[in-house]
Image 1: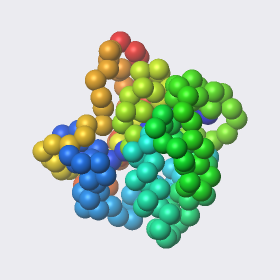
Image 2: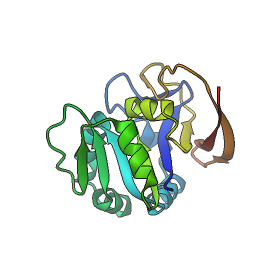
Image 3: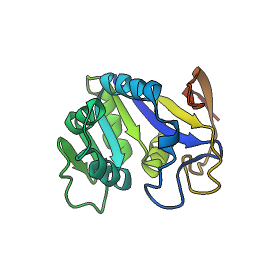
Length: 185
């Protein structure tokens, strides 16, 4: 069974982007050789990316013009975008799904294959968390107080206890945290 892994950079005060969509310029402060290698390692372990509409549009706009090893992976790997409003998903190897995301992801998890990754997409992730479909949470905890923005974790009807799998500090001050759901409360 495939695993679904959420990966996001997040500030100490819990935001994955600023007050406006795609306000993520603070990522550059913590980007470096270690984070780039970790990103490539993650992409090599996956065979599909999942996105909500907003993240998909931002990623497509950026990666279709970017160059390098990560861009090559991002542009070639199969992608699924979940949206009820998007009409066309033109980024290479993208399938648009307008149906229930949790049902579709549950089907995808039963298929053979490598890991699936979800980046950004906080609203989509919240629904998948609530359905118990995310197997691992990877966070790049950045030593920054943003002071406001879009929180990564949305309100939920219950708590989810996490088990720490790894805590790895990087030279940039960022800490890679890996968690797995331990128990639904």
